[in-house]
Length: 96
Image (cartoon, rainbow, N blue to C red; front, side):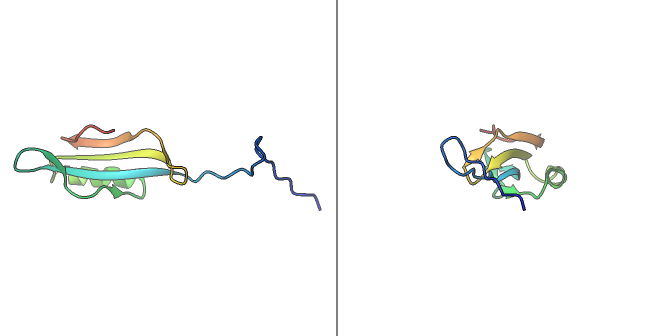
């Protein structure tokens, strides 16, 4: 039976697997009495891009603006990639 080889990092540490994921989010906006855009609800994490786009299209008829976006995320490390807009309609604030 062959031996199992575990390769250490140059610093002598065991490698830690990254828990990378694709974060997909949907949020809609309405205007308050003063005309300021406000989130219509808390941002919703969506199961995949296709469903986020479909939901955003439906919501776009009932809100001042809607955006579905995604980003790569390594939640364990607190690392997030840049946001990628999947669908946007109407008025939405600038994304950071």
